[in-house]
Length: 355
Image 1 (cartoon, one colour):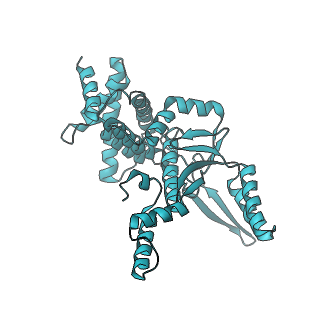
Image 2 (cartoon, one colour):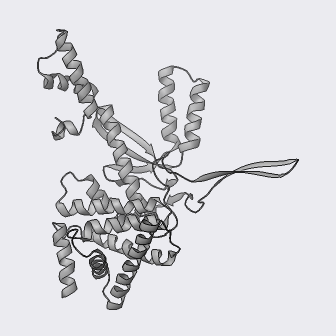
């Protein structure tokens, strides 16, 4: 039943399961319910399906103006919105009680002024919740690509779904004498914990260089083979934005490149990957040679990390590699409409290499 588009887009599996159980119980008790489950489900769905708007807050992100991403929108959690909700709740209760005021004051302190993923869907509440959460996960992942953390080796993006941003903190106790004791709490990665502020100029820029293209892919219900491959590679690449470990970034980035640039597992990986990135992104021979050399060196960094557990101090090498790959993915998005299959894309690069 979930394979039917109309049902899949409005009802969750759990909703259908509960209604099936309810229908069976009712039939067993000989109550007055339709003999056909589909008819019963249609009646129950009409009672529950409604237009639902969800707000899922994003940590450490401030936006000047709302803008669309995928099927949703990123906009500010404003004072007006929270005031409106408080008024609705107060009108239902019929009075302004102290506990209610405290609850909304806590909401204001924690969320007001920051951004949220806002999603509107016509569905039953269970499916609406699942859909909105999946949207928020994908959107925050994609936004991480444009945070700068995919180009800087030792910082991470913490503009994730509020509550899952994982900012490392530590508590220190100081004992300096008989009459002196102090406790402090602090953030370990201060560079990563800064608020990410997007004014209108920055919003226009990131939409132009790739966010709108990714948004189109996320929102589409009929992606082609190459578009699916590009989106999968982009989502893998986005994982590199959410760690501040340089070599973990390298592992995620190489995985994303291998997923889009290799024809099969039998190919020589390092040589083909380096050459294809170089040919696709650079025009001059010297630049291409430099990219190939960098990627070969990066595979050495990954190998030492995976096989010996070493981390790398070669931040300049990793930084240079990350800048090359940023250019690769921006150009990949610019060419997403040119090819129908991943094989066609890779063959075009190889043909250019030999021309």
